Length: 336
Ligand SMILES: NC(=O)c1ccc[n+]([C@@H]2O[C@H](COP(=O)([O-])OP(=O)(O)OC[C@H]3O[C@@H](n4cnc5c(N)ncnc54)[C@H](O)[C@@H]3O)[C@@H](O)[C@H]2O)c1
Image (tube, rainbow, N blue to C red):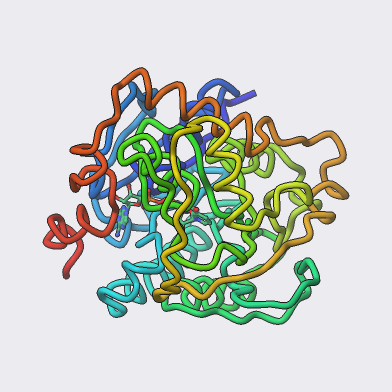
């Protein structure tokens, strides 16, 4: 049988290197496309794809996508503060760009289009864990763009083209392209670098969390899956046991860094997300799938790595691991 081919966008980001490595290990031919905004954040070796395209995915053509079974679309302006910095870029890349890419994939005869959506589309909710049928309550340009792409891609689905929407929990943990602008990584890095765990709220908001490698494992799972199982489906990616309140995360980090004091700064900032998520559909579709990490084992792995590289106050305060700061330096690569 011919080797199956997958095209991944955003492989030089936080989640992407895990996706490329796992796809290669599973025997896929992998092409990967990234405009290279964040490679200054590299702390570990990466597995190279078979073909690497360093370019804006919005410049891909139908021809570039011919012959692929699956497109895994990760590339995006990937967090809420960046959306606040420049809403237009978020909409141009995350919304218009993603819809354009899906249309190319459809024309090129690609069978599956796996879109990296986000649980942040649920935004703010009460105490009930939300499943895929919940009403959206997106709080930011980033989350609004994810809703818009899901809605548009649904209209493209047909007997030959299966888009699918992986609504990922908030990621954390070790990746070759590290970032500290995600809640768990930020609190742990702050504990090690500053000796304090600074929570920008009263610690009560809930978040569903997942290790970045487990997100990558889910993408490979969907790549392997029969089309009929996942056709045009939105699926929350995470686990029911992995919804945490921010103060619970802080307590867990304090177990690893006992001298670090927990400080509640009380600012809510622009981030008003507060929601719990139900993941029953994922496990109904894939009864054998399990996350490799719990929050505790993920923190332990990251703690060991940050200790090994002597992660310092200078690292914490540098631009290297903060997407917003790197993006500001590299805006010229994506302004059209
Ligand atoms: N990290 C999370 O907590 C999380 C949670 C849910 C969903 N997601 C989604 O998963 C995807 C990957 O997230 P991540 O954390 O790896 O993000 P990231 O910001 O670390 O990586 C995104 C990558 O996309 C690239 N990129 C951006 N615009 C591009 C363009 N126009 N052309 C080509 N490449 C471009 C960047 O250079 C970067 O390498 C994103 O779509 C994100 O919205 C992430």
